[in-house]
Image (cartoon, rainbow, N blue to C red):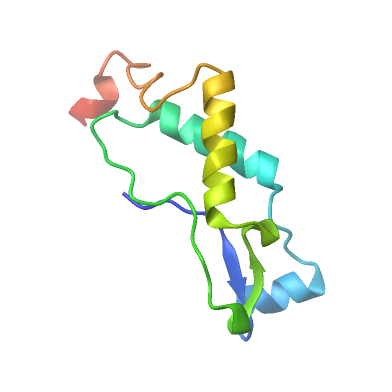
Amino acid sequence: MKSHSLYILKDTKMGEWYEKGIIKPVTIDNFIERAITFLEYLSPDIVIQRLTGRAPEERSLFCNWETSWWKIVELLEERMKNQNSYQGKRFHYLNGAVCSM
């Protein structure tokens, strides 16, 4: 599974909205909290391939809060350890009912 942070490219509709201030990406802290929540509800059997993405620098307007991808993953892992969080922690919140759909 791939789930990564938003990046915004030049010469796209989203790029236009970003430059006009119509859209504003979430903060890095908000992204990390959302990613943790997602991971806690995700089955522990699912392999995560990617949590961040990169865009070609020459086309990028916004990417990873100007932070390296490995630093974002490091921050996420550190926060998960501090919160005693892990993938699948809340997976059985409906006693498996969500899995039988």
